[in-house]
Image 1: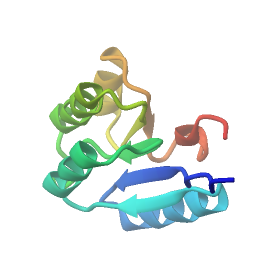
Image 2: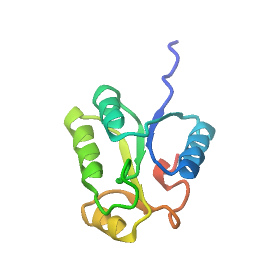
Image 3: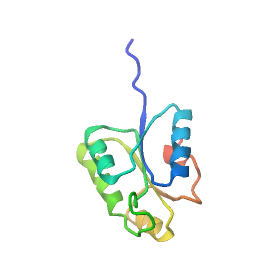
Image 4: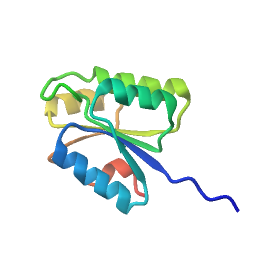
Length: 122
């Protein structure tokens, strides 16, 4: 019987504490976490590899900005590849959070979202 492939999560978070927390939680859930700290690297990884989960900060590489264009680009990349990746966008800005929700993203505020929400009940 073939061994089942381990589920994977791509983490694109620049807040080191949150990154470490989600890395640890992913491992506890039996997922294989992969961290990318730059937009270009994360986008390239998504173009070549399918992930079960992707948790990103829309301001990766540009902390504090009100800009969700990176989240749109990641969503579009996932859709264009036909992947079934569960995308969750986590921001520290309430205005960015509201922008994300208005555009239909699964999103959370860093200080206020339930910790396991990005993993969708696994």
